[in-house]
Image 1 (cartoon, rainbow, N blue to C red):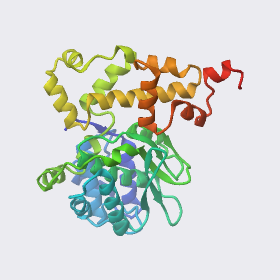
Image 2 (spheres, rainbow, N blue to C red; image 1 turned 90 degrees about the vertical axis):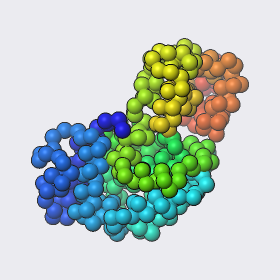
Image 3 (tube, rainbow, N blue to C red; image 1 turned 180 degrees about the vertical axis):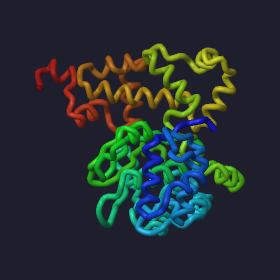
Image 4 (spheres, rainbow, N blue to C red; image 1 turned 60 degrees about the horizontal axis):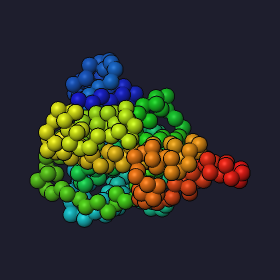
Length: 340
C-alpha cells in the first residue's frame, strides 16, 4: 500500500466524536499508535487504526453520526451482503439498503439522470456534519471501487451542511468539485460505470477485510501512486503530444506489461486516464466559451470534430453545444453570428 497522508483536520473530526460523548481521546489515540498530541497529518494506516479504535470506544463504526449506531462488525456484514451482485448498480443498491437498515438516518438513494448517477443522502432532521457525509461516502465509494476493481472517478460532491473550518481538505480529498450549503448531500459520477461487472469473490474479500479500513482510504484515491504520476506527466503536455502506451512505459522506465499491471492494481487503465483528463479539459474549455468546438476538438487530440462529439456524449450524455449552453457560456460561433 502506498504511504498516503490523511489531513490532521480529519483526525480532529474523529476525536471530536469522542469528546461529544464525554470520552477522553488520549487512550484512544494511544490504542491507535498515535502520539498525544498527534501532530500533523497521519498515514492512511494510522488513520485506519484510529477509525477502528474510535469505533470500539463508541461501539459504532459510523462514529455516532447516524440515526442509530452502526455496531462493530456491520462493515464486514455489508461487504458479505454485496458478494454475488452482478454489476456496480446492483451492488450500490444493496449497499444503500443495508446502510438504511443499519443507520436508519441518513438514507441513501441512487438517482440516475442526464448521464450521471448520484447517491443522494436525505436526513429526517437538521443537516449533519461534513465529516458524517464524508464517512458515508468513504464506505460506499471505497467498497464499490474494490468490487469492480477500479476507481470510479467522481464528478461532483455536494454537502447539505456549511463548510467546515478545513473545507479545503475536502476538496483535495475527493479530487472533484465540492459544494457546501446544498439542498441535499450528493455524490455523482458517470452513469456508464453502473454497468461495470463486479470481479471479487469470497477469497478476495478475506484479504480486503484484513486491510480495511485503511485500504479504502488509499487504494482508490484520485491522487494515488503510479496513476497520479501518469496524470501529472500528461497534464504537463498538450493533449496532442501525449505519448502512446509503449512510449509512456519507456519514459517511466517500466516494461509495458508492468505498467499495465500496476495501473490495473490501482483500478486504472491508460485509456481511462486519458479520457478523464480530456473530459476535464473539454468541460473547462467549453465553460470558457471562447473557442469553437472544432478548435477544442483539435486541441484535445481528436482527428475530427465528429469524434470529439461522440466522445463528449459518451462522457456526459450531452453534446458539447448543449453543455456549453447549460453552463451559461457563449460560444465563439454564437458571438460571431451576432446572436448574443
